[in-house]
Length: 386
Image 1 (cartoon, rainbow, N blue to C red):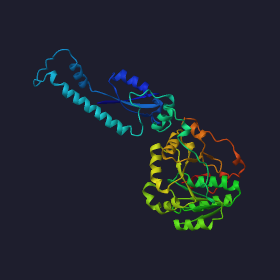
Image 2: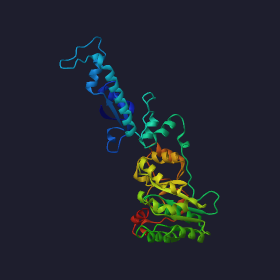
Image 3: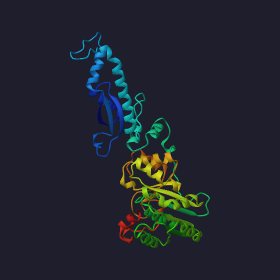
Image 4: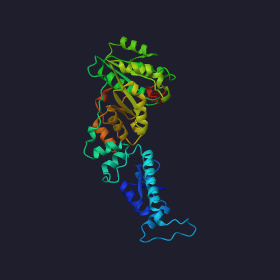
């Protein structure tokens, strides 16, 4: 079996090229968006397979009108003895192609050969890391804005106060996001607020957060155990807004966070946001969300939108998990580089729009925390988000 990749703007264009070069019997094996390194060659990489020349010769002989004398040196085998063997060989090749397509194209569904060619909308969605199955549903008439939800609120509906926890992998930007929301919502509401940090693993993390909280004029406690966190929540019951920072847990450290996850998942007042970098690939996003299921997050919050150009994975994972998106972070500036998630904004990004800073809103009246006032300069704020 000969395999060859073709790069083109559409799958159907690649199919035409393959049939010209490999013949009409060229078999589609896989199709996927081109990687950043090969995107200059075309939007899609499409893999085709072709039968080896020897098999083609057998097919030609099988279709001849009369018997063919076998070459000298054969063991008396005639062409009439070969069709059954040839059919078995072709069937095995087809089975191998199907197995290969399932392995290579597991994350990128290719419409069957009988389906109509992908539309321009389908091409745009898949090129922006949108889930292929959801993209097909949208092409068939389901509105894009109906496949996902947004919920840019802090706290649970009906709870007597707003208690919000931020969980996520190391470096996702949890601490910086927490400080942005503390400045944007805590100061704006002029209601008593409190920050509680459970991150005692990173060096100087607690001191850094205390410095940021001091600049904002918000109290900050550091607790070392889930039981201490529960006690701190009771002590600050009079506070209208309580924001909880948590340590970033890598894949091999998830067991260390089991007790904390149990408290956050079972506490009746805690609204847990799973903080994820938008620059992650869709497969990696799915993996991290699976790892953090024990925290039972209520919402997804995406950071680092300024570090990527494809946003379909954000909407896809929100739709697949039935978790609304709360906020979007577009940089490190506090409190400016954060915005409430809206369907209009996310739809534009999923369709390939270029990221632009959000328009000025009511938060402009909130005192900004200049990067130069943060201990260790703006890099400190970036480090705090680890």
